[in-house]
Length: 39
Image (cartoon, rainbow, N blue to C red; front, top):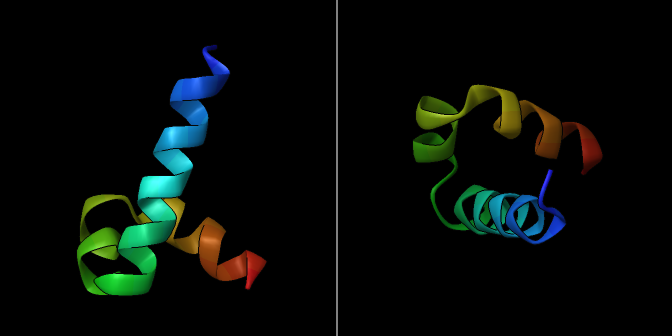
């Protein structure tokens, strides 16, 4: 697994979580739930 791609995936997901959480929840609920669990 490419760590750079994984880091970018997470950072974009986090950005979306902060700016448009409903969009992230709709497009990638698993990542949304993961980020929510961290905060």
